[in-house]
Image (cartoon, rainbow, N blue to C red; front, side, top):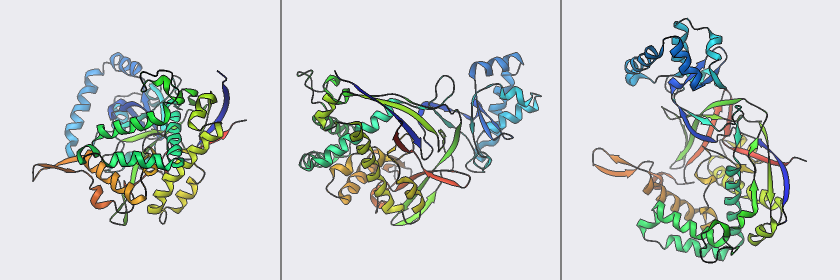
Length: 401
């Protein structure tokens, strides 16, 4: 096995959110208005503090009573925890010492009437509090991009897979499980070419992607930022912007943050899927990313031209809130944009439904078939902080040498 190793720098052009699966409720963090920071509480210290000061029962009662008093008029927020502690005579510095780590949060986001800070999806972080991007996240994006490039370079094979997907019964065509099975079959055809286990093609030992290892991307910077997700949408050709009234906020790695990661490759394996250099991987990533962005630009570019100019330098979209188009191969399989849009709208309407209370039947939750006339799905995932707006997840990859 002849391994080649290379170091890279990843720059966050826009904020990036890589969730660790944890969502903090408003009573699990504190908002420090003076320093405009969210303090994520060290659970052990917080419980010990409440017990030591005889405040455990009082805090539980305060949270319950406040939530009841608010009713439908608002949500319990981290600002209330700060005010309650200060009202009990706890010094500001003593509260700050309870923090496991801190994230910047603008007062406008926290104190807005309808979009005030509520639940916060937490960014993946190392034990010392530094945010990072898991190598598995980066490699997953690379894997999708390599598949995308392969399909673009083998149009007859792509057409065969596409016809297979469209040839399913309507129920199976819109079934998430059936589509996952079709996608898995396609990926095994393309990637599982090593023949290490001839009896079981699905075995991961057969995948040429075994020849690529990607480290976690780490940084010396500790700061993160709390951002609200904003969906800008087109409906029936009309551009509009909408904000969820009770949003889930995200802790993000800030724009401008630089992280370092490495790739280690066995190109004797990767060559079997057309990858003969690290440049091949980064170029595939960039081409795949720019293809998705260009489709979005066709719908949103007139209004958001400056955002797409910034996106011109992006090599990859990473993390949560980057949208459906950053993770799908449909555009590489479909014969044209109309076919891709029709397939996506039907799939989304079938898999995301709500109950019509009047008719007592299920109906599409977002009416993609009816409303997605330019692009599907019809949203551009954004984030705002002050006067700045970004397309979430944009990153650039450069040789660090």
